[in-house]
Image (cartoon, rainbow, N blue to C red):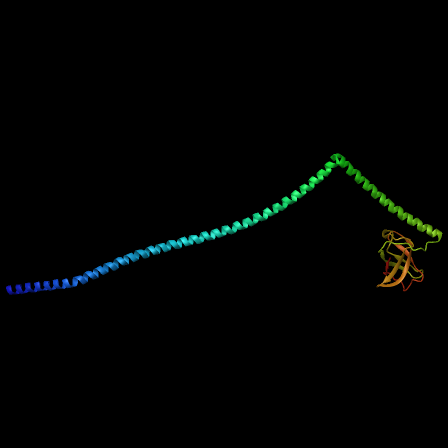
Length: 252
């Protein structure tokens, strides 16, 4: 029994010795592995911290970039609005300058008129009276002109009547330049026609008109009697180149 205990003790001591020997040999390797592990762990923690820091900085940079882009868009929009407002103000300024120039020119003209007015030495009431007198004078002159025209026309009529009495009524009488009309009635038996011309068109007896149809001359007529909007004319002997028809044109 004692022997067994001794053997067991020896075995245990031998195992301890072997373990100690193995431990002494393996310990440096284990310590190196542990140190390497600790180094890797520390390095991993450092890299993880740096990665987190970089990621955070990247997020902050992204946020700043988005904010900067937003501010840039707002700034661009504000710049565009400011440029548009500046152009509008520039246009308004040019328009105001143009109005100012016109106003100055009008003012200069008014000043000239005022100076001319002052040079007249007339009061406002005197000018009003002068304007009324001028208007009345113009109206009187207009009435005199109308009376003159009537007298001239009457004189021509009397001269024509006098020519008739003298036997010189066949002398052609001038008619207004450009006188035109047309034939209303034709009497082929007595060779006279009725025209749509009268005193309204200033036609007078002994006025001579040419008769045409489609651009061709067909005859000549001499006015013998005149009414307000009608006149009678005889066909001039020797000038009846074709039968005169209603609707034919007459001209002076």
